[in-house]
Length: 228
Image (cartoon, rainbow, N blue to C red; front, side, top):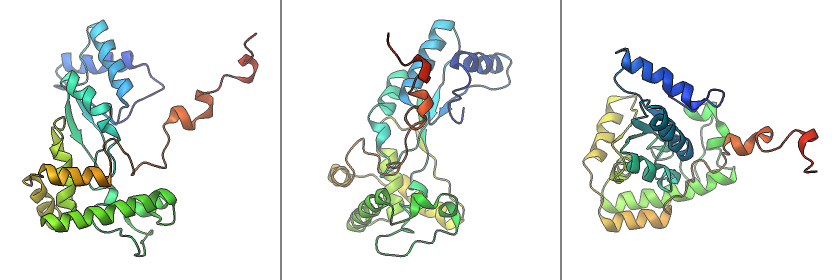
């Protein structure tokens, strides 16, 4: 399930997916970018109704997006779910393409689709670029590239099963694979924690979940707001 479907009850979704498994059409199923509370809800619905549960979760996780460390990853560990993280390079911020004090090309790639996410004049992006400078310095100090550091970091969390890297060229693949064999010591991990504290999400600093951004989901209809 690529994203939660808030127009369909999770029980109906699990019934449909369970039917597909029992019919032999799929072996198992998982979810992607589900909030922790919705994973818990799905788990209890499956348990209560005798349905098959989500076996994996696929969340965004990177040096700049550590929000999943607070609740999502511990919940996946508790339920024995596999975790396949995506976005270890934070849409290019951790490739070295976007650096502080350098002009950003907002006409190509992901930047052309969501320029606000990469525009250095946006306050939230300034914090990302500050962190990238410090992380690039750290990578230099330990003798690796910034992308290698990014992959090694994501793989270091005990809840993570695998890291989806998504290279487009052979040199990118070869460079990222070096990060898979890089073991970061505690001193390096401590320096990362100083730059981007555990549970901090710099990458999505300008994003709000639908329950907050959609006013209709947090306001009763005007006629129903009076309590008496």
